[in-house]
Amino acid sequence: MYNDKYTRILLKYKIYLFNQGFIKKEDLDDRKIFSKHIKILYDKMFLKIDQEVTKSLIHLIKMPFCVHPATTLLSLPIDPNSLDNFEKTYLIKLKDVIENPNVLNESFRILDSWICSKKKMNFF
Image 1 (tube, rainbow, N blue to C red):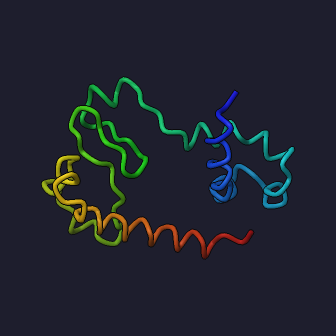
Image 2 (cartoon, rainbow, N blue to C red):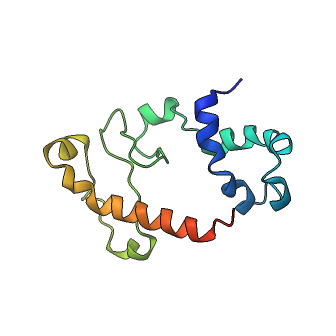
């Protein structure tokens, strides 16, 4: 029913299900029990492109580094500690990345800090 390759990728994020209270810690390593929760992973994490993405500027794509089809704006991670300094006027478009890929350096730093903090929480 689901794409095997994408399912393997999603399974790497099973800690998400645990942190959200969808699955018990003792069930995380039981493949048979865990397979029941694949639908939850797809519902919560699978990138969905729907009508709202293409017709409304207020609709957000939540997957980092996606390009909005109408505006060509990138969906980028934001440092929650710097929200007071966030300016909507400084949004990165696809053309900005093509002209200067280094404009993504700060976003990569933020994403890397998220990954490092998740690894500290990962107890598998």
